[in-house]
Amino acid sequence: MKKREFAITLVKTLIIAVFALAFLLPLIWMVTSSLKNTNEVFAGNWQWLPREWKWGNYAAVWTDPDVSMFKAYLNTAFITVIGTVVQLIISSMAAYAFAKVRFQGKQVVFVLFLATMMMPTEVTIVPRFILFKTVGLYNNLWAIILPHFFNATAIFLLRQFYIGLPDDLMEAAKIDGAGHLRIFGQILLPLTKASLISLMVLSFISCWNEYMAPLIFLIKKPLYTISQVIRWYMLDDLQRYDLNMAAATSAIIPVVILFIFCQRYFVEGIATSGVKG
Amino acid sequence: MARKYRNQNQIKENIAGYAFVMPALVTYVLLIAFPFFLTLILSFTEFNFLKVRSLAKLGKYISWIGLDNFRAILRDRRFMQSISNTFVYAFTTVPASIVLGLVIAYLLNGRVFCKKPLRLAFFIPYISSIVALGAVFKFLFREDGLVNRALMGLGWIAEPWKWTVEPSLSKIPIIFLVIWTSLGYVMIIYMAALQNVPRSLYEAATIDGASGFQQFTRITLPMVSPTTFYLVIVRLIAIFKIFGSVNVFTMGSSIASNTSIVQEIYSSAFSDYAHGYASAQSVVLLLIIILFTAINFGGQKKWVHY
Image 1 (tube, each protein chain N blue to C red):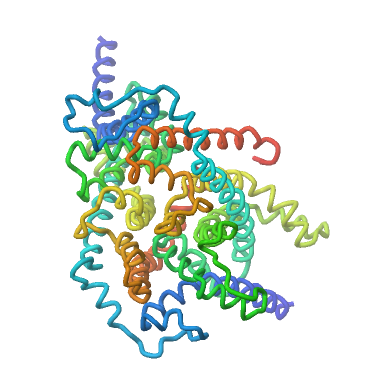
Image 2 (image 1 turned 60 degrees about the vertical axis):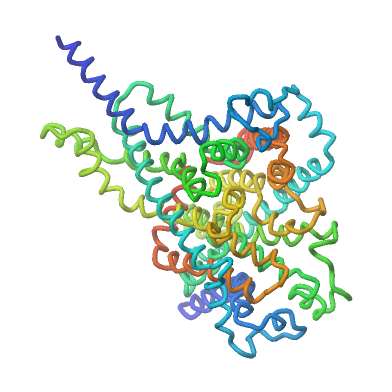
């Protein structure tokens, strides 16, 4: 019996492993191409590994005087860090108010927020362009950062979490004379750490990979984000496939590392936003 | 006295409540509500914002044309093509990613070796930059790319197919790209849902002599149907607004056979500077999303078991 069970598990593992390998093949091709010579990338034979490992491709991408990946990393990191941190602060505050403060008009505001969950931001690109251009945020990283501040899904999920926290915690603090600010900051906020990490990972991914907004608002090369650097190599007349793939690999690596370290929070974050949303 | 005290307390709660909601409310009004209403208003105008010299005389640059934009949309063959392309993407990739995602989640949920690394493999495409992955796919589907060489090696095709230029083929690389990048998400959601199916149901079915396949169709499928419902809605919306994976393939080409709705909105707004027309196209997109979400909610009684 035991032997049979082991055999079934092994067969199942092998089936999934074949799928998984098929899934990874394009990425493997990307990494090996990033280390090849330009004319080797599409050479007509089945050679996966580079003849000569050209680590210099990465140096070229990262230090290009015109469009450098290093600068793009700094820009993208700036967008990601500020966008994520402020989004979590704003969402936590709103979630606390919706769950634990009995103020008038609460339902109306909450429904207004929820109504936007279905509306894609793509619908409002024209007014956003007009707005940001008017206030001087064209060619400015803040044009990418600001829209990340409001996230209805994050507010909704955190509100669910705050509702689950027992009111007794608050009542005791209230008797001791604590106001909402102290109850929120010192007692309840620390309890939401796990949810905050899940939301942080989700926000990181969405800021890091953002494509459309930078395309519209960041025209000057020193402001390029990582996505735009990859795009720049795709449109470049020199057709340096090797450098293009080195740029693509550079974009993906930090996300994969983050995922490996935060796998648990990540899976929980997506799963709760999915099953309960 | 007591009443006055209660009023004062309510005022205090109101102040606290709005103070806490204020940052979210301000960003909501400025970045969501205001742009949304402006989209609606601009959809009835002919307007090029880049021509505006002074904001004080904004009215001079806006001409009200009623429903003309929407009439033009009906005659705009390229935009109509983009709507039908987007439907093709939605109705191929959503079912495919949901079915494959469920199968992989089902297999991964049981006893397997190396569960975490395997899960990671399916997940990397979902969390990675769409331009990076799009660049890879565009290269794989080139005339001298790996896909053509593999198919020719297998003897399935005689000469290289022009995947990115030939109108009848140009949607295929994008469809594969979308399935590849969305499957990890579907899989994770299903894995969470499968964990909530009570084991006792399977045990009872085993005692009654139900086969593995019967257990899957009679127990698993109905039990995860609310999740399937959620995934259909979320994935449909995600595909209706598809941009990145399409833009990678349309950049530098002018064929209409693989363009998408948002790609067309983008080019109306930022290549043609027709900001009124682009707003009208955005309204059409929003109506499509609302329509399909309503249809889904209407049909859920037939197949969703709570």
